[in-house]
Image (tube, rainbow, N blue to C red; front, side):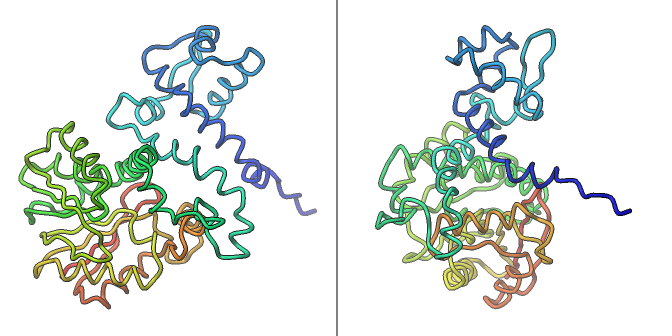
Length: 337
């Protein structure tokens, strides 16, 4: 007789929002930042977090079962990954993207079915509001949260890029859509000979400059205000674009790649990194889900495969292209002029 298939995966994914929201609320309540100070018992942690007695044990034991916390002798402590990535006081903190997911993306994804049937964004633009970026850039507090989220999303990939890319062959690079400048911090911080340009809208300038100064790179990184829709990209030996192309439709993707080609010298490189969809479109679920997030967030954005990006680069005139894995679902596509 054929074995009855297990429903476990169906149930885990179908009810995955339980675990997701538990983690997002723990980040919001700074559970991991609190425990980074020292392990504490349930009563102490409940008091510090302001938890109701009814739910406190379940809320804190669920992350134990999920692998985010450890508990022994009645004391809770962070697991190694959460201690490294979710303590707000560490430079490796990537909780910014989770904070934004909690405040913005979580409710918007509740209307995914509507997005799939209409092809329309489900964020602030829904119902006649401002488009995503206009809405974010109009509110200084939300802009800061968004830029922190972009730093969290880019930090790990940028650290690998700093190691894998042959930076010794180049002297300058420009990061397009630089946000806080986290990619510049990671790359220029690892290669003292490099100087960098951060290119983004003028509103980002003070936030970028503060982040660069805090990380000791004020003399080696310059902010250039501008819009990549209306202005040329800064000239540099290498141009980087992290999680930029997926925001836009195919026409804008091609335009941005062409502008990067024009700004580079002969032998210069364009380095694009994203949560790429695998070429077979069957393995990298994160890349496919990220593309659905672009449906939620943008009028025409979508994620793509490494082969897609290489094709667009070759159409723009890049003579050599390659795809390299970075970490997890992150890949970089390199084009050489």
